[in-house]
Image (cartoon, rainbow, N blue to C red; front, side, top):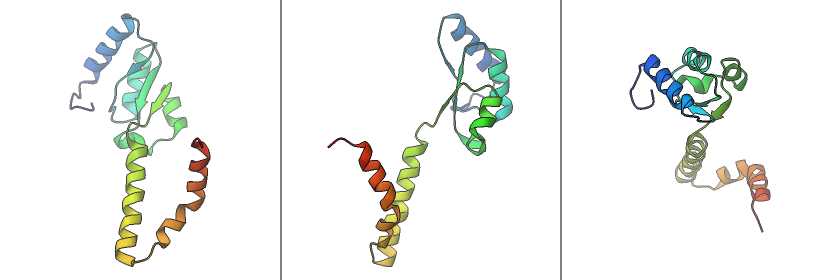
Amino acid sequence: FLYGDADLNGIIARLNAFEEAGVDVLFAPGLPDLDAVRAVCSSVSAPVNVLIHGKLAKCSREELAEAGAARISLGGALAFDAYAAMLETARAIKEGGSFDALKTRGSARKEISSFLPG
């Protein structure tokens, strides 16, 4: 699905082949919705990793688990969210002329720094 192959039955067949070959976790990135997640997860016995993408970004962890997802991947979503926050702050500095926008995430900055060595 991620690269334009919308043949769910074909994808399930390939996942079954991977499972028969002995993989530990199956991954079909780009599944379009919960119905597709359910279809994939109910068609294989190995755990399925689901990429949060498109409509799936509106689902909760609980909904994904109920659909059968054993693992959830975010791909680049966290990085893009960080880039969006950086862009928003840069625009506020450019358009407003002050650096007040840098202060709004001060507590997050301290928390992130606590994870870093030194």
